[in-house]
Image (cartoon, rainbow, N blue to C red; front, side, top):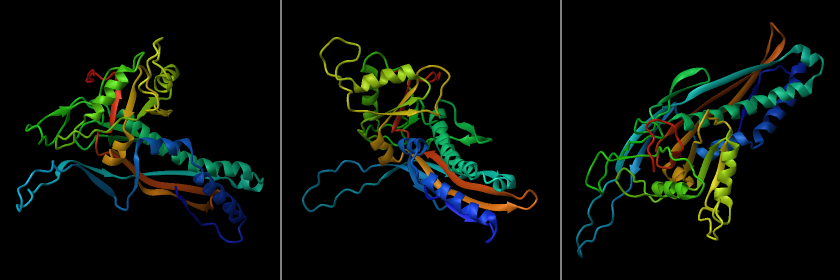
Length: 341
């Protein structure tokens, strides 16, 4: 993640020797790929930014090629612009101190643990932010509270929650009509066979862009909460068994080998069996969920004269936004607006 560190300790001071060791511990922890990093990579396209905010717009593709007579000019066409979304990056910060007494008593191992935790806490914060935003943007819920800040916008480019029963298509040229809405929020829970999963995947494959053209993306990822072990075990059997789950028939399991399972251990719904299916290809192609790293973790230290402690400060800026909704679908939702497949 390329953490940066600025030491403000003075040469010759014993703190300088400690700072060198602690810096090494921080760099080592940053270099280690962990579950927090993996979760963010699984649910979002990670991007860098050098501005205070970023705007994204959905773009419908060109129309079909048309037949033309010999010698005639080709018909002009234009890209159809969909909905736009602007996101402003937020600042996150944390301090921790190493006491002079800890240094005098040579408790370097405890100090290195503190330094490593500064990195892991940052990675955990990124993952928590991504998980909460993804799983909270449902129905009429358009804001969330995180890190002590309320009113964080979690809507998509169309101004609605990511999971909504009535996403509008801005331009439905192929059908010749407007104001068409599409649902990606359903109450159906994965049952004792593959039928619900198959129906949901088929519906996602038929999602249309803002021009009204079918996109054809295949769902290939299932995201489950981290506090539903029996349901998790069932889903593993649904997507991994050779034959039909819960049946003595010799029919093949049509879902075997098609799915990647992501268990979001930071998502802990109080009831029900919600799940999210996603197309990883659509996530990348449409950049449906974007996670912007404006300022990766930046660490500075200094010795505080009044306490003689060495204080470390971690500083970072990041944001996440939903440019599109066509890469995801929620199943098993208890939201009142959820439809049935």
